[in-house]
Amino acid sequence: MIMANKYQKAIVLLSGGMDSLVTAAIANQEVKKLYFLHFNYGQLTERREQKSFEAICQYYQAEESKIIHWNWFKEIGGSALTDSSLSVPQQEPSRDIPITYVPFRNANLLCAAVSWAEVIGAEAIYIGAVEADSSGYPDCREVFFKSFQKVIETGTKNEFPIWINTPVLHLSKKQIVQKGMELGAPFELSWSCYVDNEEACGECESCRLRIKAFNDAGFKDPIVYKMKKK
Image (cartoon, one colour):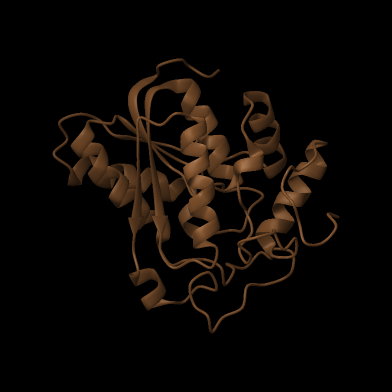
């Protein structure tokens, strides 16, 4: 059951994608004051993701929002999302860790969120990671977040608890769509495509997961695709 005012203040890590949107919708039901945090790190759809972030912040009337600009993910490379020498797969996700994995990204995002939480007195950080029915990124696993919770407890001033919340972690993509619809999440403002900044390609693994999720849930996806949705 979603609890009203479970926290007074919380930070939501908001990429602008479907999972982080529904996480924001859940946080909106549980938190009195929402603070949204976004990262531009040289990803292919940086411009479009920022547009979604800004629109969602406005929709949920964020108490405050921040955009962090990092260039070192791009400099390090190793991911098709940041390295132009690599190609984003145009296929269904496999069981292997995909080339779109940005090495240790969630740990870095959480570090920044924890720093901000200490400054503003936020009791929680919400992140829209999905372990099941997703791309199989290692930093989206429950064991990772449990371990990072220990990092927070031992590496901060610890003047107040800062809890990591992963409300969609064990939901399927279909269930995430259903939960978002239940909460009235503005899916039309979100962006999932890994490749294009204008119209979603419909072919990359992220688009494919989203299309399948909406089809399985029995709802129409409100965003525009270059190709006809399967």
